[in-house]
Length: 354
Image (cartoon, rainbow, N blue to C red):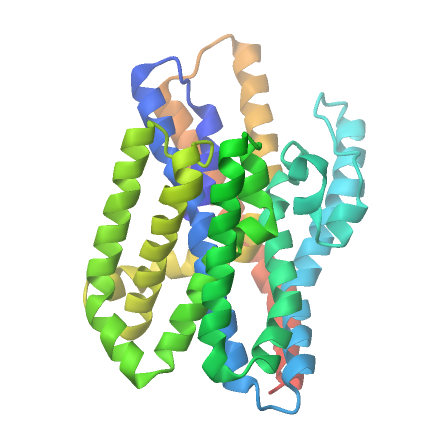
């Protein structure tokens, strides 16, 4: 989540200046927070489903608990974008634009299939990943339930192979990079890698084998990704090399990192992962992701309006401080949501035990 906040805050940087251009390029690595999220989601959700597949309340409990976790914040945000902010902008007579596109794509969690994949939709462009996740939640419980456990590894490997084959086949055709980046079939390998790690965690043999080599796998895979990005001259998915080679190895690296974090009781990964402020961001990460775009755009508009009024060009330290202020504001609002909205709703999860 921090990676996403950082990459979206780089709109404050002036890319015509060498130092700021370098910072902007480095910040773009933050977009891979989404890839890490996909792998982590595949790992956690698959683990939950594997552990509860014999439960008589398997489907009911899973979907009820997902509903309580995801839908109130998601649809509350859509309601705010549709009604609250347009009314606010009208009342204050601001110059800020509102979203007036097709709402059905977002109501049905299929915005990543929308023409243009929602990439330019104001305040909603980042919802493509939530659409991928919801489609994953819709199909995965049945997959885990129906496929014999001993055959799940082949199922997951098949999904990985299919997604990679699609990207390798589509990339040379000059297809828009956002199509490869946002469509569910071309992104399912990250989730499937996480699912494979969840299976390995539940096998004494593979837990021991992968546990020993996870650190090395992470370093080698991350190294190959870095070499690929340097050769391509681009760290983003706009590069064909990233779409094909780089994306594969960063997902493998994240899979190894998550497996290491889940199996190690000590060491650097454990110490970093249990840092209090990081855990706080993890706790509020869902709402942070949902609301950060609208908060950022309003704060950027505000600072632009102020700078025009006083006729000054804000220095880099001031803009960096403002970027931290934006991140802090999103964190604060998400913490309020957790306390007054999400926690009361999540307390209802106890009614849906497995």
